[in-house]
Image (tube, rainbow, N blue to C red; front, side, top):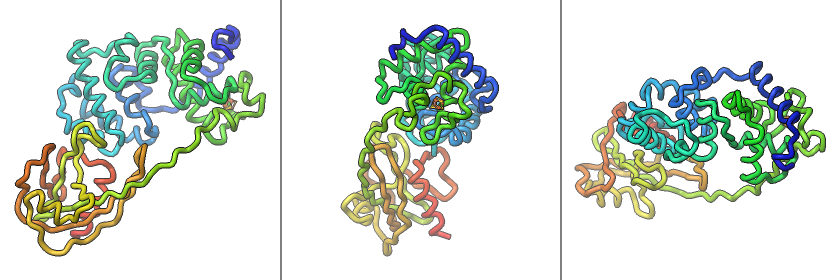
Length: 351
Ligand code: SF4
């Protein structure tokens, strides 16, 4: 269906039914208690590709650590990555940090309400622009995430909705007087009722308008993309220890997990070779730690850590830096989830 051919009474009926449902049954989520633009921006960055249950654990601690956009702008990247540690997709943390710096430098510390200005902030794409503009400022801007895409595909019985069509439909339906609630009501419907598998159509407030329910095609909407094969990469790690400390290196800027700390990757050589290249003297026999599996977007990582006792200090320049860390002494050293597991198993191996 063409967005501009949806009759006005259909638009009005859908809005009323969905907003009434949202008023009655919206989940009480921490970021819904306040429409302060900075709080909304933080929640939208955190919620990208991450489950609500996970974000709940990070959201308030983040706001305690960085209560305003200015405080975040002035923070060191290490502090930002440490606060994000475990949330994954660290590019979001770096982008949020940079976005705060742009807001501080160009907008006097006030997050702009204009969608074009929002869209120009680092890490703010089409969806985040619509979500922040509508939720924080009441601007009737369309916001289409995965949940909304699924709801629209089913409501209008479209197998493969295009980005343009989704944007136009979203723009046609968004409520002008309750834009933020409308955005959240749609996402809420997709997250709790019109779920990917087994949607609860019996409890849905918009069944009367649902074309795929009428056509019996709910399970086929939207059409599933063919699953990509995800390759597995085996990544040997050198866990180099010296008198109860362990060596970590900062990952290079711009690559995977940029700016975070990790054990040196040993590639095709032995941990002893890694130690020697760094100017350290290997001692004793190496021993293995449990393998750690981690799924990234484009590949599956199988980390294979080997512990080796060494002497000396790193005497070779490591471009991004290295540091020796004691148990309990991580401080602001931000470790990605899989590296943290290796770190913990190294700790256990010392007990
Ligand atoms: S009736 Fe079912 S398929 Fe249609 S929008 Fe509601 S939950 Fe989704």
